[in-house]
Image (cartoon, rainbow, N blue to C red):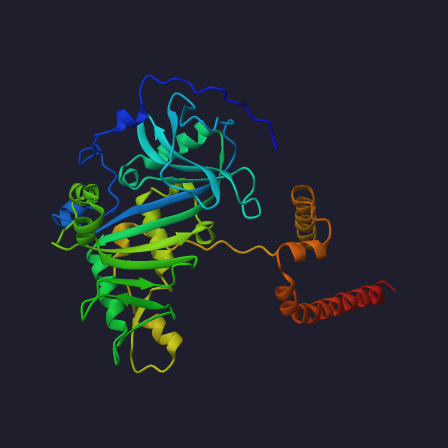
Length: 399
């Protein structure tokens, strides 16, 4: 582990970050300077309102780095002139020892988890950070996050979760079309075989989910206005709707996609607040997954899907392009060997496990190994045969 500076006593700050933040209201810029989450070309000329607003509703990342060693009895530290940590003594993390409320420029900015208690899952220098929800509805949240990363002296390893939410007409269309596609003899079908579930009482559907919560990507649809009134009280979201010029009904619908780290590896983290880029991500991730087409007499399904597909949102007005997917790189044998050596040495040095048998015993992998052994033996025999065949061909050609 790299050597880090130790803070024996906390630095005294002139301002108590908790007292300083208490009672503060979120300040929104005027309409001209606000980052309009739903970019529309010449929107004012066409309509006095816009139909859709696109916002980030969750942003969390995995970081790598180390903070100075902190006295366990001290609950707040001023790390830099701009950054102060206040220990969160109310909540507890399953995988990290320390939870900190992070104050940036004197205001609450997010939650930081440090000092993993699960070294078999996380690297020893792993940290987790999540921005508080209300800061995601201001125009400079990503710039402030970049500043925080620089101040902490850490690196962004991956985006853990990124939630994109469309509020307004488009969200309502998604909900209505998804429900309609589930009806028997409906002429609208989904392109894929995505699992869709609903909840509610009687004939009224209160919420809808696409995919499964534990997967790399899922979506949910619900009445956001009602959720704000009855549960979250996040009135700042309603204020953003008004500032953005959204056409609001008494009950404004939200359609939200939740993207995990595997999906987010395809995208540029430092463009995740760009309205066009956000819309492009939304369009790309829903194109085939939650796409729709109309049933016709054409019995060729692939041709029918291509010819009769339709969009629920006018992506052109949002400046949304379909983004290319990152191509998976097949690991070389050298890379695989390096990873195997690293894993074996780590298990030996950190946990004292010196043999494959010890590794199997420590992690209770015998049943898993037994279930895979036959398949692996067959694949490896085929691979060995191919390699021998190539060697024979090379030998023949050289002679």
